[in-house]
Length: 439
Ligand SMILES: *[C@@H]1O[C@H](CO)[C@@H](O)[C@H](O)[C@H]1NC(C)=O
Ligand SMILES: *[C@@H]1O[C@H](CO)[C@@H](O)[C@H](O)[C@H]1NC(C)=O
Image 1 (cartoon, rainbow, N blue to C red):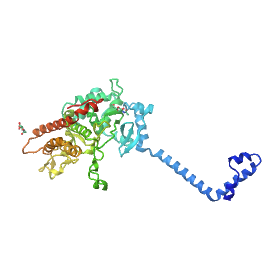
Image 2 (cartoon, rainbow, N blue to C red):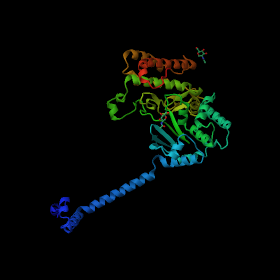
Image 3 (cartoon, rainbow, N blue to C red):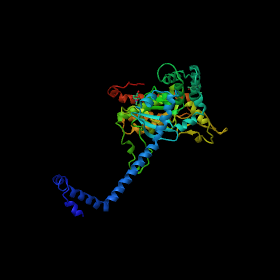
Image 4 (cartoon, protein in one colour):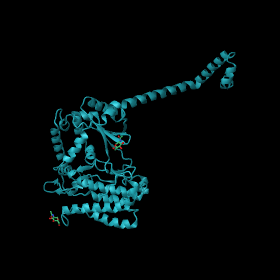
């Protein structure tokens, strides 16, 4: 049979020639060819196509139903709120009417979905969680028809709890400025409602509090409690905790992707700026209890950026968290590896004396990050400061706490000055289009 079909003059040329005379014959040949294939392969082939088709359909259906990151349900719920005047934000119109915002799912957990969109990270609560929130007092604390004075009072109370006593009027102004999403100098219920929800997101609150500082990711737009902020392309400085066989053999492999030394110095200045910003922002002090090189990254222009905002907490909140801990020894009074206080043995409760200094950990990072290949002159100088750094701690013997604080601030300023000296010649070239931030 097969031999026969090869010889059959039924290719295009022959067919044209025989079009009239052999038409009948040709058709017969094709029929024969078809059946010859059918006998052994056609059935299998058809089966395969059919199965593939079914798989494709099932996959498409699954994609459709699955809704990664609950994107559709989040957007639908959010836009429903927006259209009903319960939500506002600069992103809302584009998200709900223009549909020019195309979110792609990056990650999700039970409560929150994380999306990517152009150069931003967008986070939103899942709708199921939102419905639970409605019963919480924090969300129902704003009501329709509340006056601006009512809202300001709410904000004062809120920041008192978050940041402790002190003057928070600048922060409140910033919140009001931000909350006037349409810039009409009036507050709709949607604007107040959305702002209030956003403030209860710890990550958003941290970005807002530090929004003046270039070492934090900049805040893009929001819609209801959805918020977008800068996506940092290199999210970690380095990671020494990698325990794969590869990094065991090459113990310095964490250095392989390091940028050039001067760029690392520039990044380190940013790291020190973060510490000094955290000491004085919003009339309070902030701690990063999980401080490590994996919590910082840098942009394409080597601007250091804090990439993990979860561990940053105000002194007031940290004191509260520590005082809630039961203890038998001082080692029980630790939060996130770095923040610690001492144990009040009599009451078996941790005290509110915070004894940790973030700079100590930062000095450790500097040693790993810029020490090993630094020019010898600078290395010698840095060595002095790093040893000062590690001897710095709150104690009851030689120093009193205010002295430690003074030395702490001096040390940060000195380190910034030394490092800045290394890069200041480059700065005119590097920062051509960026504002130069000198300490
Ligand atoms: C986010 O904000 C930054 C700074 O304001 C801007 O350069 C960037 O284009 C914004 N990104 C988006 C997606 O809106
Ligand atoms: C801390 O030291 C300074 C300077 O030596 C001193 O004036 C101050 O009284 C001390 N404070 C406490 C609480 O001991």
